[in-house]
Image (cartoon, rainbow, N blue to C red; front, side, top):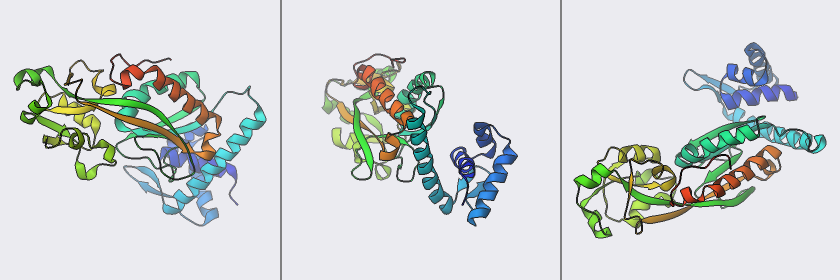
Length: 306
């Protein structure tokens, strides 16, 4: 049977995809990491990683299966250690957080530096991606998404509501026909999502709010849409937590075109019992509560250190 130290080395290589990075996290030489991983593969009589020039060490199918089990073991051991060590020991460990691209980039990442200041012994991976992060595949320990998971062994809670509005640059609005009502939007061009590549129907803003819009540029990325809108050639529906922080964009028909959506936070039941996950969960709830004015489109910069 492989010993726990070998599995720790394996987990760090899987997470960082680099032997050198795993060695730095573990405080050992990179040759030690390589030797332990090779020994683990030999003891299991399988190949756990495929080496890619661009991606580094990528888990094989067997590696993925072992990763799931090894993380469960790590969580169990960490939970037991926390229970036995009492409340006096500093919260420590590693947490991977998955989130939607815009929210993860413009809200969570700045706030998480405050979390690091509060819990310096917890390391974080942040995954802001334009898709759903899979907890079943252990891509993350904790996820924030725009749809509540319908099944699975998860603890789930509504995190917050947020608002989207229609935005354009002052230069665009000056150079094009005036917009005083929804009917005027028929004379304007838009930026939107690639419909057939949407990962959620909750992103069908233009189709739901402004059917028949003349969309001249589409992207799977809300950040790409935001930067396209800044060029002053078309209008875009954007989250207020992105666009309202940028003085180069102006809301259009702010009282009329107002879209509400929600973020949900969830994790595996076994992970929720870990102190580091519980601490991040509570920190995020407090942080979004402190930023309700920004999230709901009522103005104000991102508030940190709440």
